Image (cartoon, rainbow, N blue to C red; front, top):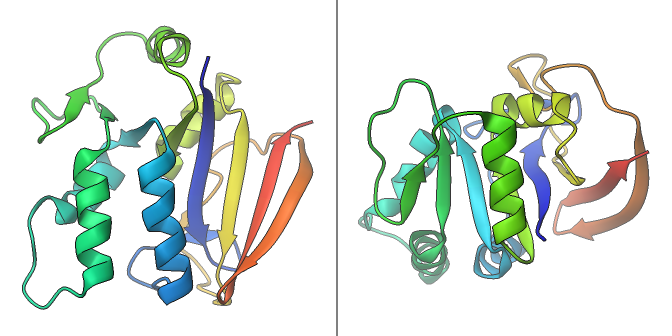
Length: 175
């Protein structure tokens, strides 16, 4: 049975904004390897629409960007949305009861399923389905935006920390 892992970049003050900070070369390489290793990714609509950027090659990409795009395109994706009617290549649009579909996905998958998007992660946290939280903390203060945790904060226990480039990754499990 797979575990659901919520992993996302955030500012020092707890906000998520893909335009406010970018990974350095070391962290970007970490994300390339992460995409290659996870069994699947579950996206909320907003995060999926942001990540669709990687569906098409962009002029001027460096090798690392091409490597990430290749890993992202190969990754199995599930998209949770009440408004989308279709999704792109190698993606499945989730339907029905969120808890039941996530429990089924976990049971049918080995390894790790990454959860991408704070709104979706908040819903899965409320359903007590997140097995691990990975906070990639960037040395930036945003002062506002979308919070990493969108609902009640679950009681957590720190199990690991790691410096990756200029970022600290903190790994927590439910306490």
